[in-house]
Image (cartoon, one colour):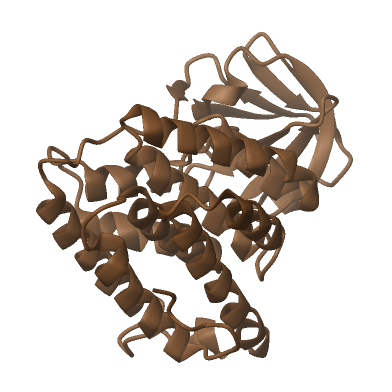
Length: 323
């Protein structure tokens, strides 16, 4: 028997009792699909906390795919998770709960500070994705990315503008176009939507903003079947207000006036998540927060400057900066 101890588990796994099977296996993660259709993910301890994740203390160089195969049967009850073959047991009884909720931040009296930190985040984003020449160009060299990104940036602009002015017809149409679209194991459009929701939620402190967030969630929930199992699970968590640690830490560093987290480190950690997921999520946070601020220059000036740089890097049709 392979026996391991869990370090943390997500809120969705709290008091879990289920049967299921292995959905997919990677070197540092194993996705389990329950009989109810939910996904639970076993993670190497070096990976960040997730709402449906169980982080496990594993030996150095341990590879899930060396031991586990798709369709292996799984049982979870009484604080233990067992994969029937190869008799793989995870003890969750002393693990720490990860909740993954965002803080809601008041910005009325500190918009200047928010803009400064937002601008710093945007410059760092551009550098880390290679737009300013100081980051790696490798992620921008694939021909499939030059096909996707003009379309993705056009949709990004459209959704941010529509949300800023409460154009619900455009919001609905753009969400339908983004979900399931783009490169990546979890499509770029899905990761962007997760970040967009986080940015929007972080600044939704009054009734009007909360109503917008509720309507946005309703539209997204109705379209979840348009993407794959892994993305659908991720988006479902976000709709329930639960996010992974890279997102919560980035939002806290960006929006909180009392945070001790280093903004540069958190954005770097987020962007380094996956091949495209982290960068898409980061741009989503910047876009969602710009859309949430209805007055001032954050959307009208700072956000448009960011997107102008991005769209020049990947020119394409229908990318004009809307007024």
